Image 1 (spheres, rainbow, N blue to C red):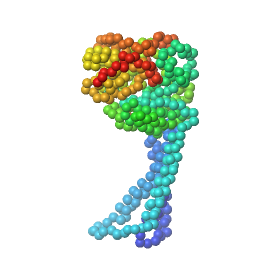
Image 2: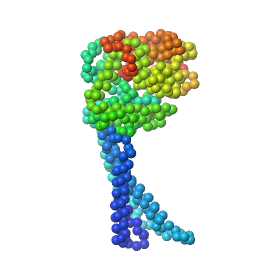
Image 3: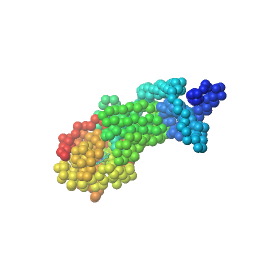
Image 4: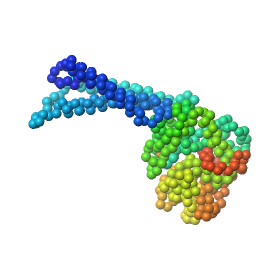
Length: 435
Ligand code: HEC
Ligand SMILES: [Cu+2]
């Protein structure tokens, strides 16, 4: 790291000069190490195994960069002090060009540094991209303006005996291939020490999944699935951010990772979520309200709905949904020629088909499973000025749930969303507004 050969081109190097160079070189290295040691204390906690590797790499870069910074700034300050013009001296400085040893030095040293950094950065990069042993997989969905996470929950961890034949059709279908059900949550739940592959997909534009405490950031690209591997190592709750400007409420696109202490704690959470999926409330209105209040879907970041205000339904990108049932039954039905229920279904399921006047095509196509869409419609139909549904919403036969053993109406929010293969739609439901 020593700067070597800053002597004047006129003479050889004296032993005093060599001593100065050595001392300055040592000081530069000490300074670089200090910068490298102190700066990381500004960073968030290292909550993943990957964070340690990345911070170590960063620290090496800081030591080298810090020493170079001190060298350049030191030479600048030294030159200003040592070679400043004397009062009244208006002559030019000495003209000099060509100093082969100096040029070789300032080419070779940076080349060695860059090659060294490339090698160690490549090693970290390759490590990060290697699937870990015994990974679990969580699917990440980014849509303007929230994050949702879908887990595969094996029926084998469910403590109660379940008679599969009594479960809702959509749950039975979900269980068919792997005897596991999909559970969705707006919070990423993991547990310490267990590696996970996060497979991400956006529903609209490019988003970037960023967990500062994990030191990992990954773009979500339309039409592609991108994956990162991470091993959380510290119990706690850490923020998730969207690091790609994605629209008006980009700043609201924040979430949380909860790292549980161990598998038991994680399973306790998962079983509670499974219960909501396995025993959904029979009343579609309650089901619809539970889906929307779970905030698994990003509706709340774009719409105001007073009934769900406590679940932060305060977004201002789309129309205010207070009184949506009245509007669906009157102006929307007459403009589109759909029945009010069909209109609401289309508005939720195929948002681009008809645009509410004054609004652009901003609402994402969320791939909401068929029966969940109809439950949402049943709930939205109750959002009228009078509080009574002004029209009937018939649930398609495969979406009718008869009260099962556990299907007591859930009072609180559930994340009942099951992005499984949707059951075939009723023919009428497919009618679109033909815009
Ligand atoms: C990114 C913002 C955004 C998100 C997320 C979003 N919407 Fe919308 N929504 C809009 C916009 C903009 C419109 C108006 C344009 C249109 O009709 O598609 C709209 C229209 C609607 C309408 C029709 C309103 C009317 O006055 O006729 C309904 C109903 C609706 N959204 C419900 C939902 C539900 C339910 C969700 C979640 C599953 C949701 N929206 C998610 C932006 C959004
Ligand atoms: Cu985003």
